[in-house]
Amino acid sequence: MALRVGNASGFYGDRFDAVREMLTGAGPGGGPDSGPDGPIDVLTGDYLAELTMLILGRDQLKDPSSGYAKTFLRQMEEGLGLAHERGIRIVTNAGGLNPAGLADALRALAAKLGLPTRIAYVEGDRLPATGGALTANAYLGGAGIAACLSAGADVVVTGRVTDAALVTGPAQWHFGWGPEEYDRLAGAVVAGHVLECGTQATGGNYAFFREHDPELFRRPGFPVAELHEDGSAVITKHSGTGGLVDVGTVTAQLLYETAGARYAGPDVTARLDTVRLDPEGPDRVRISGVRGEAPPPTLKVGLSRLGGYRNEVVFVLTGLDIEEKADLLRAQVTDALEKSPPAEVRWELVRTDRPDAATEETASALLRLVVRDPAPEAVGRSLTGAAIELALASYPGFHVTAPPGKGAPYGVFESVYVPAADVPHTAVLPDGTRVPVPVPAHTRALEAVPGPDLPEPLPPGPTRRAALGRIAGARSGDKGGDANIGVWVRTEEEWRWLVHTLTVDRLRALLPETAGLTVTRHVLPHLRALNFTVAGILGEGVASQARFDPQAKALGEWLRSRHLDIPEALL
Image (cartoon, rainbow, N blue to C red; front, side, top):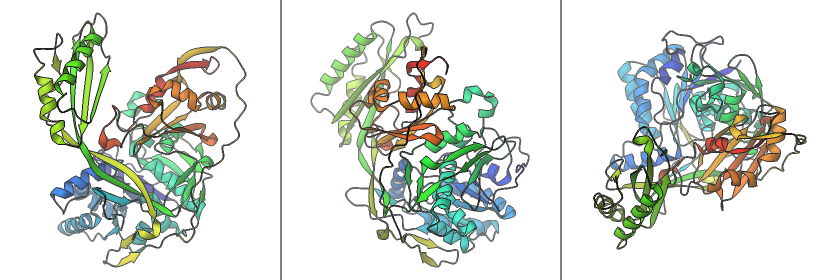
């Protein structure tokens, strides 16, 4: 019998009403509609990202009893009762840095509501933070979640687990899979990765949204995975909800924040080069053929620390002589900061202006100044004074989008790896019993997969200069200081062209910001996809805000907008 797992959150701050919608199967019209295959069995919620751990760490410095996603607790004021009425289990990583604290708060809430809800939690991911780190958390697998569910838990709260563990844990519990049933576990990992970002699997942030009725995308429903005992799955959503599930939306999410053919995790290493996606009716895509291997002997640990202080001013340059105005301002600010220059000063002129513009705003360009330094005073009063004192002594039309502030701290994220045996993965059952989760008996060191055979290139023919996005979709994201760009096409002819055209050198030419950085190309023929990793483009990670697009969310869309010679037959 299939296990139906739904998702109601892709990040801390996602749609608040999604929990109710997924528990009731209700669309925006409010009527219950669980779809043709019945209600869900498990509801998951992903609240943690690299930036979130830093935010929770700073919260806990002020209040040691905090450190978890308070939004989830508010959602459970209604959600606990709805889940109890329907027999739906809830699994979430909303525990953040304090899963025990959130479990206690949930028990108090259940008692207040008069519900016999059994609460369990998973801990052990939080490691001693040394070397200036604010938080240090290992990415755990799903075995602890499975142990809690097997002990009768209705709600399982975790700290830092892999996003896919929210699905692999329930699957291990439901089907009784052993720790070395790698193909089955790998199938659940792939399904979990598709679910983890919520509506990104159901049409959110989708490259080809223009090809469909725009009403579909106004309020996408959240995804559901129907998991089967053999490890295959079907991705779908509640009928009557918005959005779209097709091979394209699932491919896009599958490529998000992944890299090579081997997708390593604490439960299993999934082979993304074996994944097959097939349509199975409206809003239904089957995932099959996934192969798995033993997990690596180490666990990833995310470290976050305060990296220093930053400040930003955006100057508005209007009308004529934009470049000359920018040059004057840069020289003036440089002179003003000469006595105590910040460690890092970055200027970016954004030419949003148009000639002979009909409005002042469209006649204006933006000159962005970002400064960073280990000391707060270097980015505070000195920058504020340098910017404001020029108000009557600089370029004509001087003004800024907002008064400069005092500066703010920024964070740094990095990854290290520790032996799995050094992490005390523990399931704390509803009765308080503590169950150690054993480390895998067999592991396999991670290594690159040899490149696959490539199809024959398209025969020569007439071409036309056009945007890559005319035929290719893309999705991009961040992993620490690195970014990935997944690019896919939908026909074999397009694939034969793309795989021979979009090389690392071509990508560098299309995206000059990647110059001097290590770019690696991974080929995934079954998905008709290429996945590029760009090392170091995000500096010290999203929390450091070192780049205009600090999470690389739009890097793929920039690539799609770039022009190259495309065969006319494909256009």
